[in-house]
Image 1 (cartoon, helix red, strand yellow):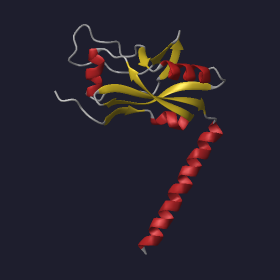
Image 2: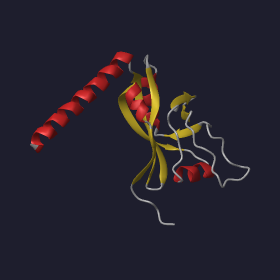
Image 3: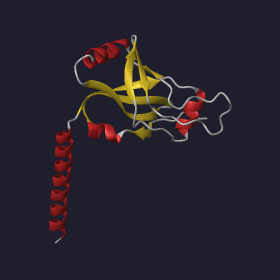
Image 4: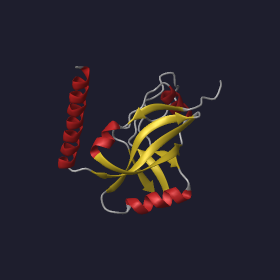
Length: 156
């Protein structure tokens, strides 16, 4: 089989951009079992409840649901197991120092294949307050209405 080039997105966490202020993003490799890779190639994954946390000096992805591979045998993977993230040591130290600050967390934004390797885009984020979410929705609606007005005016 030929090596796939480019980026093929499997799952994206759109809710994370709504619930958090994204400060910094990182691309990390992810340690997977064979049946997990096959399930991802079939396009099945959910990042909604996912987060990353440190255990010792390693970063682990938790809460991400990769369903069991349908053609798998008795040695199929557990759908919500912890998966190790593969980053350079200096990136790990930078992320760890920033997550020690109050209110910061690490959330997955997207899971994709890049040149045949499974990658996850993680972000350092702080939670939004309810009024921040409402403000963002209001700004989006205002932008949409302005675009409609401009478009309808140009059609005349």
